[in-house]
Amino acid sequence: MTARVFIDGAAGTTGLEIRERLGRRADLEVFALDDAARKDPKARAAALNEADAVILCLPDDAAREAVSMIENPDVRVIDASTAHRVHPDWTYGFAEMDAGQRARIAGAKRVANPGCYPTGFIALVRPLVEAGIVPPDYPVTVNAVSGYSGGGRQMIEEFEKKEAPGYVETVVRSYALTLSHKHVPEMQVHGKLTHPPVFSPSVGRFYRGMMVEVPLQLWALPGKPKPDDLQQTLQDAYKDEPLVQVADSAEEAGLKSLDAELLRARNDMRLFVFGNEKAGQARLVAVLDNLGKGAGGAAVQNLNIMLGLPETEGLR
Image 1 (tube, rainbow, N blue to C red):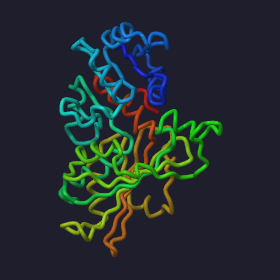
Image 2 (spheres, rainbow, N blue to C red):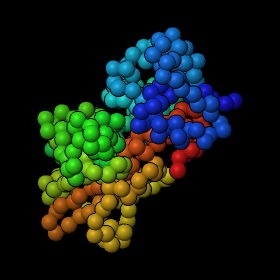
Image 3 (cartoon, rainbow, N blue to C red):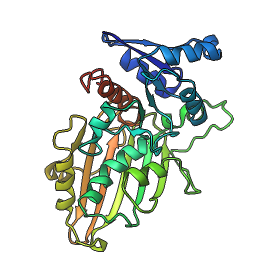
Image 4 (cartoon, one colour):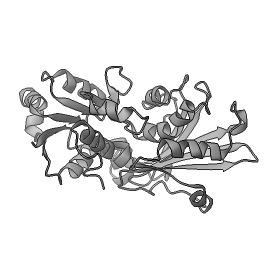
């Protein structure tokens, strides 16, 4: 039986990415509403309730409104906004997060797609917290840079259109200077931390790609772990995962630099541990595509899991 999938918000950056991935599928019937129908509450409600699965690519308030319109108890929902990522009644859609998360997603009716930055952060930090290497109350910091597509249509215009009101020619722009970025709550909750991390994001003059970095003073941690201990913990956590890989020491030793566009337009994520044992320091780095594993690719992965289909189907 072919599952019917409704994308609400298919015209946005994430919606277009998802539709492109699903459009090649013969096992799904994917549909969206045209501009006129999207503004018709009855047409939108009908689409939301007639689908087997709904993917919401909307701002937070619009996503909450869409969920409130669903009366059919059999409809499964994936929300790509931040509205439900720490909601207790929703399942967090990061399948690789721990051993039981994939099964939780498979049985869920409501799945919150992770944020792009939190995907890299949680992948690096959560296994170390669960292993007792990083205490939950450790003062964690995280630095990151993303392609400008992560800011949606407005930021894309600010970087690409000289006639746009907010056009900038800067190469790198730091933001979230009030330390209240909307991704921090899910970083804290799903990273299993007592306190919110200090998050320092920036956006660069490249369309897509992302690098998330967590520096650690190993000498300040209770067990004074070595870089190899961190790497082994991450390798054990993701050893059987097709979409998350951990670089080995030989690969890391041969690197002089890392490119945030390394996994451009892909759906996987690569983790690195760079350490200086003598100094007792380490830099944990996740590289991913902000529109792939950080958004649209993750939504397709979650959809596959929820519908009982091959997990990587439709992912390049």
